[in-house]
Length: 483
Image (cartoon, rainbow, N blue to C red; front, side, top):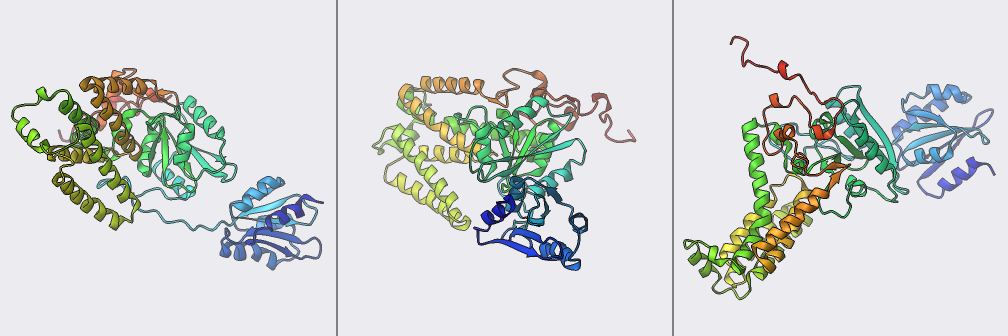
């Protein structure tokens, strides 16, 4: 039996597939499409309308008369089937023919562009990616209107067949990073990939590391900045999040709003953010270490307050800390899973009620309650959610190490953490660059955010073929033309 009837028969097993036969004087036309994936207006006005106006129209004339730009002629039935599954209409002329006209008539049922919900900022654009890949690519093209912007599409997932777009700027992005990224995405062996967060985990250098090695974002302006810096951006149809690579550790503590603020204010905000991360990691372990082994190091000013707050607590410091840390994590998880209005109420009321009840029941001290609450607030200062989750988790090994060996345990755990970070890479780039390997020229946009006059060179660790943004001697030297 011919391959064409078998194709229609296989697709007709689904109730939403329509196979329509249009009779002519010679050979009939066969039109196949999924009504759940096809826009009825495009189908009836622009496709079926061309057949109804001239029933004896030839195959070539029909192709030319369809007023839709996204159309093609194909002989490959696997390609035809994939196109039909994505909302295309297939038009076949004659029973024995092996060629079809494929016309894109996919219905768009997604949401429109809205403000960022995760990376909301006061300053800067108020646009975020949506679940449509074409819309997301348009948002990037609006900000990078150069012919050097390259977009390479791939398909991953044996069942999902998700559309993947790898974006980079030719002449700025290093070819080695592009080849590595494309090779890893093409080598992904998985049946169902529905979001970029799944793809990130599959192409990272070390899948067993708790630290993310790609940076996700929902902001097209951030992606445009990353592309112009020499990074690669990957988007997926159906996902509102793009991710960038290669990255280093310090990029996870940088908010893109820093670049919209004056450089002094942006630098201060960045320093506060990084200090908050350090406090979030070490506050609770230091409490356990000091209260268990190093109480002699407590100042006489604070000693009476701390002793009086713990005088009725029956648990050792480590149990006290674990109770409060787990309570905070439980409140955080419950607030995230509930509807937004209820979640906010649960977080506020639950925190107040549990904190007050824990102190009155002598399960914890007032001093520890303040420390844990401040550490929880400090963990929210991390602008990237995946890194924020990492910071929350690595506190617990530090707490157990502090209980076993005090400050020595914290030191050992810190050294183990740095040893792990020294071995991490992102698409082959060291994770701790520019501090390891140390590069003095790349320190200008890590801990502080410098003025834009200092951005005349791109980061050397991105190995861009075009490292110069603008000539250093051509930067503005005077504040006003009259000076």
